[in-house]
Length: 468
Ligand code: ARG
Image 1: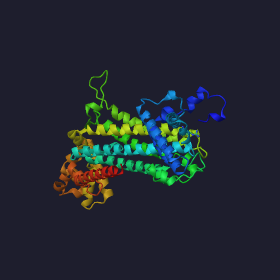
Image 2: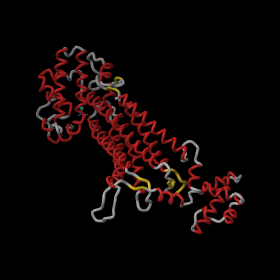
Image 3: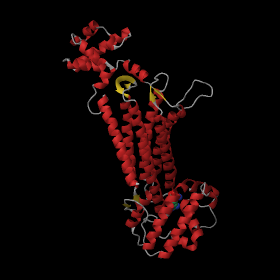
């Protein structure tokens, strides 16, 4: 391909570090799609005759078929990378005409185009998987609409919340992850082809038409930038890592929740493993791996940013490492999204356990303070009094509402004559029921939120369908 300038062949060790076919083989379909579009562009520019153009495209169709029939990257071809392989095979199929296709094009604009096409499609696939994971969260919430969980801060029981409210918190996180991925896609969707090696091409290429043919928003507007930057890769990795971090947090919570100590949820057998030694064990391995993968994605964020940070314009071979980074990232994101969905579909909340835990730990203390406020006590004073009541209850080993009337009134004088009305307002149901402001955990707000989530998923599905 570049043999003319060289005496003798490359050192095998050079080939080991330089050849990328085993990795970039995954771009073969995009490379051929880009080549088909390029053949039309150079035909329009008068470099290929109409007859040559169609012979090249027939040849590319044959190469595509050959590529699809292969089980593994054709290492034995000796091709340095996927672009070289396609050109080699095209020339074998159509003869010397195949050598005309590369006119005005460089592997630099070619690979940047191929990768953008690939990332664009992969993001669409990941978005569908994010939607599926969100749908699993909504169903989990719908299956457990009335289950009450202890909500935590500092992993200390804080205030009761509905299990569905908990599930929908992750729905919101994934919603923003979907936005970030879509945003990365939007900046990926510009076409470098026609920028040549770095300085642009001297042939009469209609880059607008070329970009349109490949489904891009339009052509990249600076040739140096187009062949040299990979911020679309970095952004995609960043958005993927953010999503993986959310899934890792979810995994961590479910791992705790299914432990004997919490006992809040059970997992379906098919997504857990046993122990070779301890017959009683049922381990949440899938969730643990979901948690671990986030660490690897975070590593790739930092790793790939470091690859880019010192590069002068324009193309440098360092950029070849973009593919492994983004392929592995998107593969792993896909796996954890699908695993999350499957695990969630098998989660059941153990209502009694959740309830008991929510009822313990003085998680109705804020409710009592709020009641005092409604009786005219300043909040800071109410906070102080209820704190003392909690201390008294702890000393007796009872719940707040189990303190006797005289004792409660002794600590919180405003409760005098009010206890008959206030006591029923200290139950779990009353506690979640009063959180009625938008975004809160009251049953009405959560029901609305579940409906809103279902509608949002329906809209996302319609949009994905209309784009495809
Ligand atoms: N395999 C190369 C890559 O992935 C293709 C571009 C090669 N360009 C070059 N100037 N050597 O980046």
